[in-house]
Amino acid sequence: MKRPTTMTAPAAPSALGVAVGLAAAPEVTAGLPRPRADAVRNRERILTAAREAFVEFGAATPFDEVARRAGIGNATLYRHFPDRPTLVRQVVLFTMGRVTASAEGSLAEEPDAFAALCRFTHTAADERIGALCPALADDFDREHPELIAARTALETAVETLLTAGQDAGLVRRDIGIGDLMVALSQLSRPLPGTACLDTDRFAHRHLQLFLDGLRAPARSELPGSAATLEDLRQKTM
Image (cartoon, helix red, strand yellow):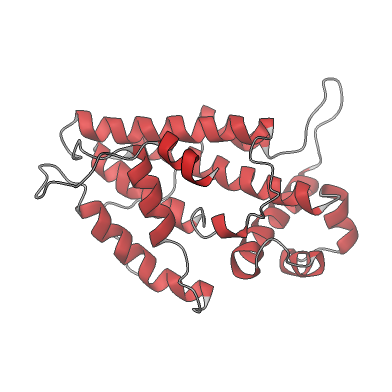
């Protein structure tokens, strides 16, 4: 699918993005050797496969299916993730870390802040950040310390990106980070009753239409007030 011309190759994670990504990596204790390279690769394959399976079938996807998609045995899967809550949490951390790194890398490498916003939004959609939301069960621990830290890093990175565009006069000022995250979540989420992966055919088209509406100067006056992250928390958390 042809992408907007503002898009470039994904950036390597910056220092903050790497730090968030490490929250989803195995804990390394001082004095102990780091995990072997094959163990790290297996872990990333599992997280990627689990994310795709959760998007398609929900967080109750059998571990057998996750292992099959990752190309590993069940024993390897359980060695990394002993139970479902651990796997679900680590998938969310993995995705949030990659999206945070994308926000930082986009702002650092694109020619202007609006191009950075476009690149970040399309990359976040490819990371399934919106489609993953419905997969989280009601008993998902949203206040886990690792998740709070990763969420804070993500919010800071995206708010910095949006503010840079507004300060440069490229993005309209009557929107907030909540508006951006709601649109990203809704426009990249599969419609009920449709095949999940087919949504990719339309998501980037619709996201670009939304992004064009964010350009300054604004061509219309928005009703209500800009959505904040606190607004979203009150309604969804």
